[in-house]
Image (cartoon, rainbow, N blue to C red):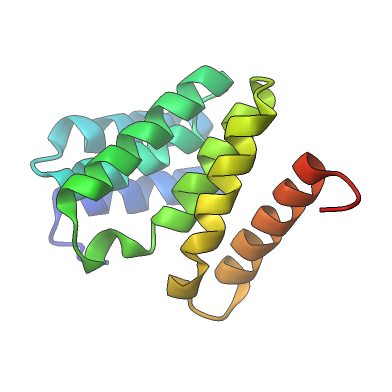
Length: 142
């Protein structure tokens, strides 16, 4: 992570606050990152983390969709690794909002992007979230 970049540094500080059990501080740091973002890549990163801090599934959906839109606009390898997580976030939000069709579609899109995930815990967690989401939405035959 480029810690010379203010937005990325704020997001790292926000992740540390999350890990330390300080959600209000994390939310404030991610909001500052959003407000400081100067391009679509930075906005994608900040929106990605803001989505994780929302309680309302409609807000989770909005921030994940914003991050996806910014990732598409950035359109380079820096955002490639965000797509699986963002689509999982969209899927979970739609599922919580009672829209299984859109949730299934989002988990399917996440599955299309798993090849960018490196082996390891993070990739394994996202792969499991995709598999579990599709299993829930497709039923036992899925």
